[in-house]
Length: 468
Image (cartoon, rainbow, N blue to C red; front, top):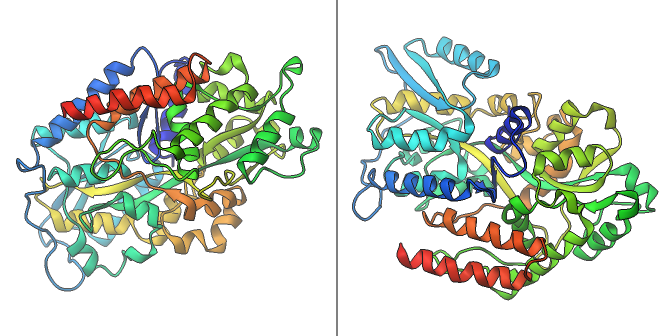
């Protein structure tokens, strides 16, 4: 079972979408590539934010009454009840099997799957909410949870969680829990996700005399330089200008920087951000120039063919390599990203369950969410499947079963405490990020400095925020 971002990349590879199209997700939120369609996508996201604003009060705060009040575990309804489940995973065999098992436990509850492609899910759900036709439960990008909560479109789950013998808030990885927390309460239940780590070619490292993957920025650049030989057509690192913002975020966090403050102040012109941008843009000299205007699909091919020695990606890429390029098994490995001035930091992305405020069946909806949140169910939906999605529970990540089942996940598990959950919930941020992506891309192409890229973005970002 793949997270939204991985499914988007998979659909790109099979649909023939070219270098300058498609959608990707990272840092826990939707990330848009620089392309001819970027402006249209930004407009779509702005419409999404406007549509959601109709769901809350005039202040934008939740105005719905709390659900789940009572004592003891929630009981199933006595009368036949249907729970609608909106997701991009409902047609997968494992989900169908889980629904059958759930309905055997709760004969009065029927799960009705409402399936939608991952790349369309947010927009379709927003349209449904605005039309007063929301599902009972939705499977969403975890980082979108606070936005739904702040606009009154989701249900505060705290009462249900307090009554549950299944859901243990203390067992969730802190970064995943941060995604679904708003106003000190949990409005979603994390389902799984990934950290961004380093993939490297063992054979290319050995040929260059490099004994181990880099653990610091300095070692990373030294390795990239040693692995780069333009005459031989081999390079140390893969970079993509169309996805420049997403791949810059880990370096930003490692430098101690951030994007926006809680009150919406632009932070990416700080000294830390400049240091991260200088380092990141400088890595372009060790990347194949023919792929700078490409995308991550072309990058995985370059990595698989031995043209590139290091590649940054989420845990999803491990499964993709095994499935699509089995001939290089044993020639690659994974490692945590190198540590920067602020230590170990990486982006984290995930998915979550939310109960929509328009539901007429909150208790039945909760029982379905609670069932999917059982540790054994989360294991089935993550590392026990063919993919390489990580469960959101510390108890599962620290158990022996996950690495016995998928040894390649160890490096990503080690990165979990370093995961940074983006808390940017400003509805204007997608427009700002589109600008940041374009400006950093220009710097990667050598058209301007990294500092100019940040300054230009900040100027435009402040204008965007001022317009509201």
